[in-house]
Length: 461
Image (tube, one colour):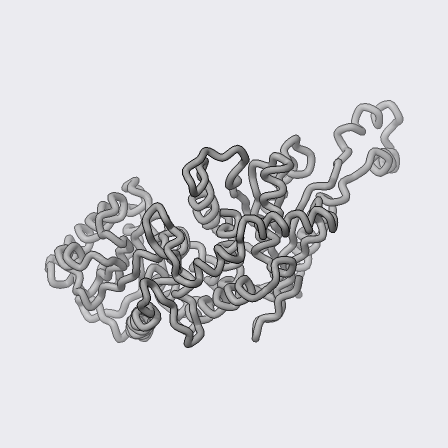
């Protein structure tokens, strides 16, 4: 399937290397219809409270709604509030990036530290790393672990006069986040020695105005969000402030544009042409009918080195359940273990198991056709893409006994040695993969890829 973006080239999704024939594909589509995937999709986008355990709507999609259409929750359009927070973020980013925002000694901000955990860390960290080539703002650092090493090592290299802290906690009571925030504040005041200076160096992503005020943060520098934004889908909200400070608000908007593009595809495309739906159905096929327990995300782009870690939370926290919506224990496999590393690193670590191990490990291979760093006449990228293509082909075709024997004989090995070695050189093949190729990784394309996997997870749920 090819998805033509407005300005960022095509997104090509190749499903051809899967254990699916026409009949199986039709049965999978019937499964989606019987589970009312389309109706559930419409309920989510319509603001219905599909998160029934917390009686909440699930509307992270409203955060990236780039149309003029209203989005209703309990009969009230949430879009004016969404746009107000985006405007606040835009104004703040402009002040910090331009140097207009000054620290307590009158110096501009050079470093930003995002203090959060879970969805308040994983998404911003992944996107900031993925889009480092687009950085226009201060250096951005992330602290999440309550282990004091994380905050201590980060602060060692920073200057209190030019450092801004973002405290990301909806309730402003998250144990790890507030412990790290208090340590950052103590470190800062050791140098500043003035409580009033805190307001120039700390901002909050929270809804608890009283706690934020008690911490010493000016309420004008508090960025809110809503209970219909789940933590693992919150990078599109004010939680993405660190992203916007790194790549600039214009690029942050392009990230939203890309996600909206994929949302539109998901809402408007028939099931048989719907990329998130097909990805989801293939996952169900391998998990429930082939016994696959894991799914590998393998980006052939070093900038995407946190992509798999991000979707570990998105997938495993969403679908890591053993009861149905009605409370009955399931009699089938639910969400897989999600894992992966960038290519070609993974080839020298765990691909052996994918090729020849006893476990079936479906994998998504993701690559940009163009590198953001085409050094040495693109030799690095040519080698990277050659590996990308060769691995998916080898996983599909394998290597037969005859092919392996011919290779060994050609190398000069004797017949007796060939007989001993031959079983170890055979690859069975028929290992399923999806290939996802983009023109290059841009803010728009990254937004589309993230939304694609979000919707895959939703369909599987």
